Image (cartoon, rainbow, N blue to C red; front, top):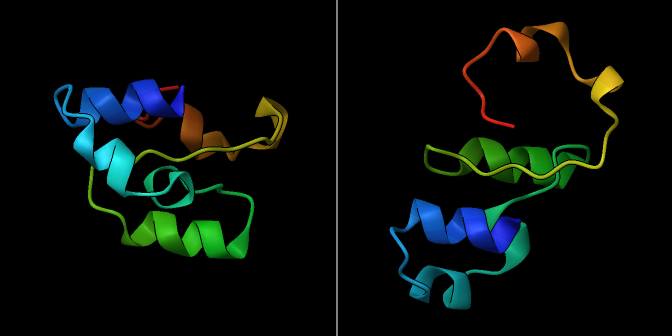
Length: 67
């Protein structure tokens, strides 16, 4: 999924996918390092998570985030 979203974000250009590691393109939200990387990434951000949906904050569900 990360590869597909990365390609969509870059209008199908695979160079970004080849040159930027996964953890920089879609950092894990549940780790402190991943959270910091995600905050520093340019918008629109790609963020990965392994958290169950029940652990997401309520504000997430009223946001414009795509899941």
